[in-house]
Length: 176
Image 1: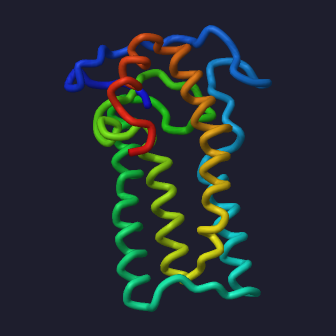
Image 2: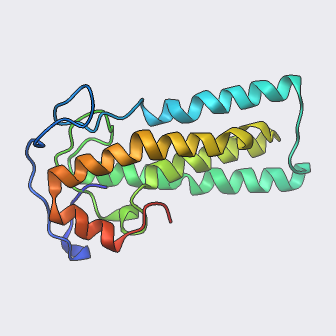
């Protein structure tokens, strides 16, 4: 999502203030609906709570533990993405201004490794809890993320970094 390295051939974008607001708050932020961890956490808790009243299992024990552990292990993508932001000396929180376009680390393969990591954590917890209800709610989470977080971030980053961000989008997929 943001910049740091010549290894991709995409020029490093200069910092600065975006030219205008992208929502009611305005300023140099993308104005996402809410912090993404909360957008995942709320439906996960609701799904796990629903399972207490209406149990709806997914997999038998050995498979759910393997699948859940795999999802949680792959969520290391989230940590790698945060470290890429730290190396670029910019903030990973989408409700704060960004100063660099990060295109290295996991951002070489997906424009949203943090959200992919949150999705894997969500799936891993649901699998380990043997609850299908969080998976019933997950498509809604992803739609909300797409419409009210990712789209707003993309407009913000395009305004702020222009051609460098457009070149990055042309070379790296949004999710996988």
